Image (cartoon, rainbow, N blue to C red):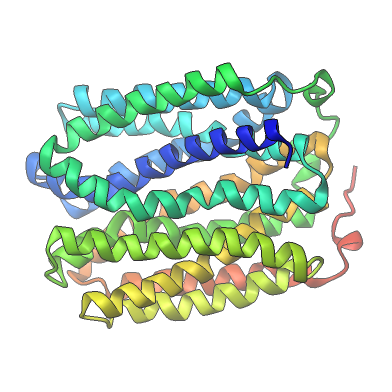
Length: 396
């Protein structure tokens, strides 16, 4: 990679770490929030779910803006909004209603970041280098989930959940300033408005099938992020610090898988990406279901690690596939549409899990739900195994 490209990827990676830490910390913050406000399990699900609702609603507008005003402007705006509302969540979230409002607004900030990063990658890298560049950015989830639980436990212990979100908000704004100063503006040609409508893109089978697949993949991805700390502490009776280490093992799996998948798929599975998605999704489903039956922290860590390795393998491959099959000029809008499926999965997952836990007082049905979601993710991309030329035909 060129020197300026390496700097850009590093800064975008740093921003992505902030984005994922925000989501990771929330899973641990639910414990003190539940205690402080005396809310039910279902209400806790709403705090997490409402974030993904706004995230989903603003994916398409964010993609539209990204294709018109440029990825740098959107990156800065997204991080500033994210940081500002995280700060408000910690400082001004004095009632359950205010917590809901600020998490909804924070989701707006998050919505512009993934499609802006994808646009930056497509604009600056050749086709054969895009999977690896994007996988570096997506590996930020692994770093965030490796260090995030330990940072979260420490921060919650020393400065509380309010101070944790306030500090995170200030950090996000600081990274936004650095990106504004050091990342170059995209060339004028990159801002050309797309001539393909959203209605037309929705007729593209690649877009539709990846929308469904990523929706299903993100159900366990964000479901585990939101509820696993609570499951380990309350049902497996692990200390908070131990649960943090278990989840960190999953984060390590995400990190390794993100980087490894980008390299392996780019080198050995070019053109066979749907097969990789199917295999990884099925393997992840088996590992996720097994986690429920593991009582010891070590066993839970091993299967969470493996589950996240395969889950992230399917996600990275699915998320980067549009970069190889869709036109550059529509990339921001296409990624916005596809990622809407992922964020809708994040909206549905914690609410459904909260409901299932509430009526059963147990997590067994939730692990079945998460595992079946990965099976559905595999089924969704089977049609993409056909020749891509046929599947990418778009009806005007």
